[in-house]
Length: 325
Ligand code: PBG
Image 1 (cartoon, rainbow, N blue to C red):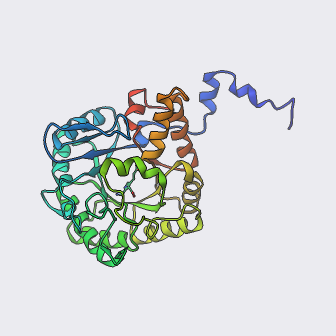
Image 2: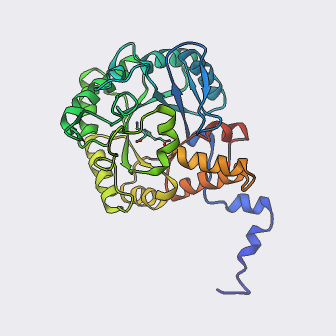
Image 3: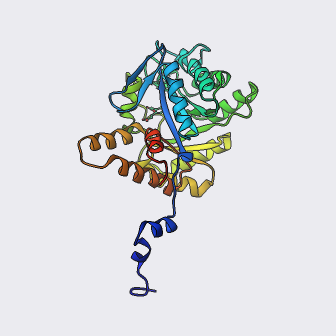
């Protein structure tokens, strides 16, 4: 049935019709807000490369989480910036570490908010790599042992979900075993399954001071040119016990989100990373684009591609502005 019997513009005539035929929706229910925490009290420092995002001490973080819970956002993803970094990133698995301290404050202030923790070493190590650094590379199997320690320590401090972002082989299985053995068989794992070696992490690395002191992360994070390999990464993580699989970054990898969702049909998260956020904010600050509209358009594109969950620095703004598309 061609033109003029068919006129697709008929259903675009007004907002009511457009609402009726809209295929994809987005709400606060889909969002996770990433937050940064540091030691101390009364600290809330804006991150220069990520306007509107702050590095907060546990007390200020708890206050922020209360607001986020009130806005209806289901979860936060917590990143710790420790006072002291060392070779093995020991703050990350210390009962008195920056994340463990923050978790206690957050769970007390906002008990109805899911506290998800990023499990990795790059924020905690003096060399800035995501694990045990030896002979110019990250030792996979030694890192697994420390990842188990870190994940268990987060769970003991009150984490509701563990999100490993290190990209070591076999880490989902190792973490699952450690959690189960520690009595945390009901704590889900959201794995950064297809995580690319991306330049879009730039603003985040400035925020947490985690750029590798030497070399890069291409020896463990994925090559942006690959797509079949992402499906293998996801397949292995599901086999190892991942409950949710993540694709990261989101915007340059919508095709990967689509393939993962259609191939496996498991809950998929998309990480709308720091560089994707900061590009939009910076362009909007110069008057080149409308921040709110571009935010909604990009977020809905991730949903349309197949993401069930979107981790985004826009979560709070989206919720404050009404919270639906
Ligand atoms: C690793 C980690 C990174 C991000 C999330 N977890 C940085 C990296 O791999 O270099 C990046 C998030 C972002 O850019 O928003 N701990």
